[in-house]
Image 1 (cartoon, rainbow, N blue to C red):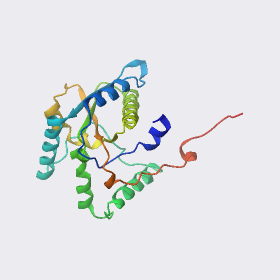
Image 2: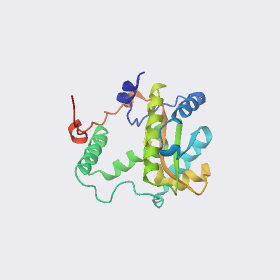
Image 3: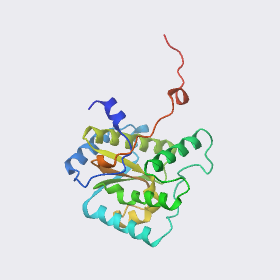
Image 4: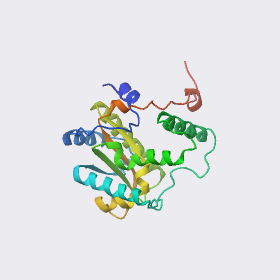
Length: 222
């Protein structure tokens, strides 16, 4: 698979089979992803690759919290600005309409939307997950480096025939994840990433993208 195909086929998959992800495949992907760029080669990502019993325990504890109606953990970072301006507000709204519309869930059906969202904390059935942390003392440029690292991981997973879904949702249960993984106190959970083989029977429509002219300005030329 060439890089263009990997980029074009990568999407957030929210339904996985229980087919095991080989440990050597995960190690190969993460070894190659270490070459992702970072300013001054800080490599600010701290990743836990989790499968088997530890992942099952994280899912179990998260499920118990959901069933008990426990509130989310106190946020450690702001996922979105309190008031999104245009065009970002409209893009987020369009995503929600497409995502829940594909599931037959009406906009006003808050309970059904919450049930659908709860699948995040089961990793959408995926048998493998990454939990990506960043040092609390690092700044915005290092957060962008982590984003480049995660994209590198996702493209390499496509080269292996695997799919993924990054999930800031796990930051809402960061205490539950920490109970199992025991990360050092100086690390903050940025996101999780579900990894596995797609359940093709539950395939979602891919979210569209803005026209190139809305996000790119070409200047110069021949």
